[in-house]
Amino acid sequence: MPNLEVVTFYENVNVHEGQGVYPGRMDISKLPKWPYGEAQVYLCGPVEFMQTQWRALIEAGVPPTRLHREVFGPELLNYLN
Image (tube, rainbow, N blue to C red; front, top):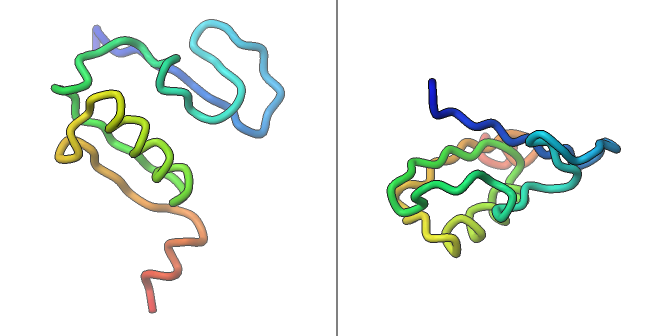
């Protein structure tokens, strides 16, 4: 993938910012600039993380129909009953 840009955020690890690595939760403003209205975005993670990122991506201009998600974590057990 010649145009792939990777950005990594570590929420619970003490890291030094630089070369696409950031401390804390994902911050939309630190992502590479891309045409938000044309992108397909895939989210995977705990519910609270995805809700926060979902709202931020929509505010940045990603259409809800282009947001895809997969839940993992203890919240997933709620769907098994």
